[in-house]
Length: 459
Image (cartoon, rainbow, N blue to C red; front, side, top):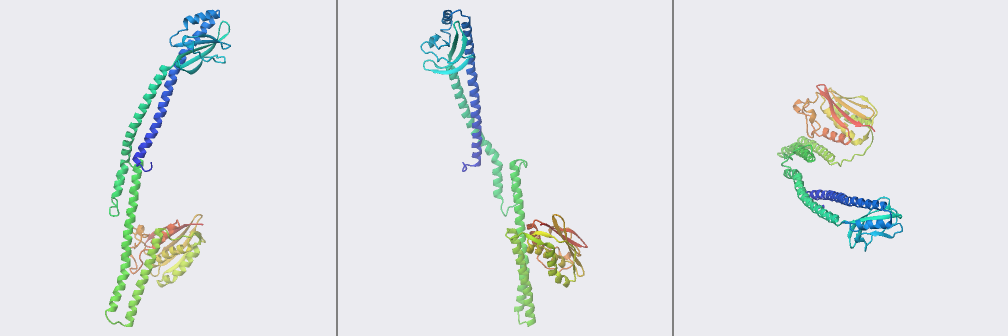
């Protein structure tokens, strides 16, 4: 059944359930009508049995009773009667029962009992029995009648129900297929629309008629998925273009320096200068390649994150000591506020990289004579690292984008136009913090400086 289409599977399931309901309904109708017909026969038989019981009670002697029964009940339409005494001896039998007497009940029957018998000569008969007082003792009175007409009616009813049931099932299969086809039509339209979507046609969307039903939610989910895919592809294209641009610049510098050096004989100092420039540019390329590799590892989820207890305040002190010469070279004061002892869960190497990137970024963008203040505040669940510089701040329009890859604030607004970097440090920091299930954000920025806040969960 799994090889069938969804349309046919829905049709067959619908037809199967409807068939069960039709069978149950037909069985219930057949049972009710059968019981009603048999009860009608039983009611008439009980009346006949009681009538004979009244005659038995009024008779003065057995002879008088037999004469009366012979005259009235020996031939009594469709009914046959049989009477037997308490010892089981036949007292009276109707015309059709003389040669084929009924089985005599062995116990006293205080109320009319009902049984159905199969007699070869009479066919199916319905019997009712009752014990009544006769002239010389108790008599068991039995009355019976053929139920061939009832059986004929029931056979006709069964034939009608089966025929109607088959017709209903056939109509159900046809109607179910039509309804399934109509119900799945939006799915086919979604499939057609999805087939038209490709990397070059990401503007295509699935048409959603009703967003509140199941198919509408499916269409909305597909559209949301395509939106995410489109953003991802656009980011990948932008990332590739930015990476190519960043790689092209140092390569162009290295090629230009090499071409200039090869145009003629140069002095030792000139060759040394060319080599120094090429060394710096190659180092820049190496750093860029490392950063790109790290981002790719985070994107692919292969960057290992060994969870352990990390003394975050000690990590901050170590990173500050590493960057202190860089700060001193720019005459930037690196100081600390309140640094509370804090233990978080994570990887100390990656967390030190986050703090290094943020502090290095602050030093690069803090003018000579400025200061940077780092602090750690810990509460019951969260450890917050605040790094505030005294630079000119970040324009409000740039704040939402500073964690994007290769994004750099317009240098025309910066106080140091020579500040380098590929614009990947904060992007890497955010990827690492996200992997630690923490947050990194710009808490405030103005002309007096910028404050970054990193929040991580305590152990």
